[in-house]
Amino acid sequence: MKRIGISTGGGDAPGLNAVIRAAVKTAIHHYNCEVFGIRDGLDGLLFPGGVIPLDFSSVRGILPRGGTILGTASRANPFARKVERDGKVVIEDVSDQVYESIRAHNLDALLLIGGDGTLNIARKLYDLGLPVIGVPKTIDNDVGGTEYTFGFDTAVGTAMEAIDRLHTTAESHHRVMVLEVMGRDAGFIALHAGLAGGADVILIPEIPFTRSAVCRKVTERIRNQAFFSIIVVAEGAHEAGGEKIYTRSGDEIAQARLGGMGAYVADFVAQSCQVETRVTVLGHLQRGGSPSAFDRVLATRFGAAAVRAAAEGKFGHMVTLQCGRITTVPLAEALAVPKRVDVYGDAIQTARDLTICLGDG
Image (cartoon, rainbow, N blue to C red; front, side):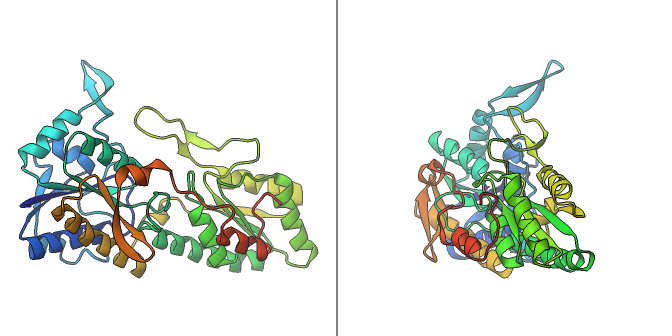
């Protein structure tokens, strides 16, 4: 193994730079490898100057930095890429160009860092015969095969701090505060931040809610002289029998954009409970900023382990955290079943024990 490539794809998350740093230092120091960074997801393989050398100086000082020094692209899917032909935008499979570019750069291994979308691309590239290792990243913590993905802990901390701040103004003004957090199909951020921040209502995609259950909780608190409530809503939450709320439709490249469930909940609570209600949407604040200590350590362990896995020829695998240990699992196995909140797990049971409303009671 003489030359390694590194790519960061999908949405950014705190800890990406920590993975890059660990992989570069491990590859150079322990394996005497050359390391190359691929800019803007896999798009860097398709244009001149998109593949750059990385050395110790390239990664100096990046450990506490959010984002990624390589750039990323949510739509850099070589199997379905928008290109312009004769003045028209069409969707094309350019995976053959990516394949040839990787071979032309003489890369003995390619570390693909990303969420389920990027890891699915990694699996397809491996099926084409490319030497790919996956590294799981997502603030949603919804990648199978691993207990945690880096970025999740930082996002939960950001949401928890927002809840703490909303508590003081909610209590002062006797208001209901609704906080909308990320979580398309998995409610891990909402659940963990809600538990950590002392929320009164937590709404997640895995448990469809009813208006009556939410309003009953708010009314009950008012009746008990608690004249404020904190409601945490995952963007992918939805009513029983209802649908998720989108601000933009999807296409062959991009998923439909979620947004508005927080405002929806705030509106029906204000009308039904006759209480002043405000909504805060955290949005991309959850993606930005310096990674937490947990995410820095996890990302660093993942980066070093990915290089070791490549050296051992474990291509088509993803590094993973299981029972506190870093190991690897086949990409196909990790992606077979998306990870979701266990509605019968201890975290949900704890929320119920604490009389937190999950929208179904």
